[in-house]
Length: 418
Image (tube, rainbow, N blue to C red):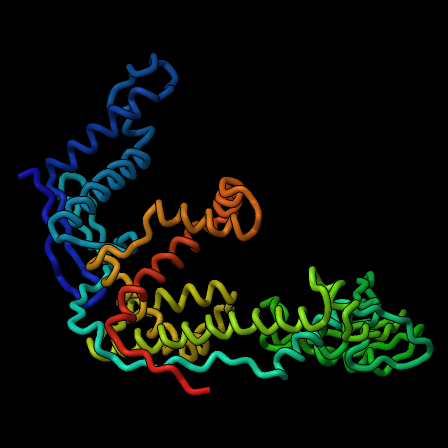
């Protein structure tokens, strides 16, 4: 028989293991095809192109021919397995226990991650609570204070040690074991805003402009540079300048400088409106989280470990977690990854069952809407989103909106009292 055989050996909710056997006849056909390919392209001394004997070509290109045969039969076997087992893979398969001997069938095992098949028997009839999206006056005041800080000027301070909230200009030079300083790097930073490691800020605040000092600084465990996390280093820091922030008055002039506002009242109203929109988005997000959580619980949606590990490794890559901290990281983030897997499974099942995926027309309409708000041509915005790889992100947002537009009318949403 020339047929490739696929036998299921193990499975769980999110993976299958398959034993594949490629018969000798099929292997020989792949070898003949590979040999013909290399014979046509071989450039061997003493032979015209395409005229070298098969034995010579095999001797010269044996390893390459073998790899070509493996690639061919594995590709064909994978297509056969997907068809015969009706697989819906979420990644390329892993291959192990490969046996490839002359004159024998090729045998190997395929392990493939698949999306679990869910039967969501209940997706409505839930009771949800939307948090109040009110904004306190103090929140508006805080935002206005940030605007003042953005429009503030910086005035030099002479002969004084700097304090938190003040801007400093410093040079920092690493010291070697003998106390020799490497070339210094200049920095401008505002103290007390986590722009430098705490040990360094503490040493800077003990200096006056023109003074230098050596210090032992320890980088925190969550430092953005993985190579520096938890490490200590001796440095020489020189303070050159200290500046104090002078905040402008909160008045009509500031409002006009901050944007197209007639007076402070108009700016305050715009700030409140912006904060209320943000609070509304957060309230809607919480309602969606509640709904997904209740669907997961009502349908006992699983979180297969293979998919959880996939999410964990994606998180680890995003946060650049060092290998020696992976154990602690996975333990800490495991519940979050489980929730993400369950949510993704629910969303994907609903998309397929009810045809809720965003269409090209809906994507074009959303781009046109955003372009109008920004005052730019739709084609220009589309090209910009495409160049920055954000079209897919926009498509996901449209799809998610469609899912919840479908789900929410099937449940009751109680509005929180303000």
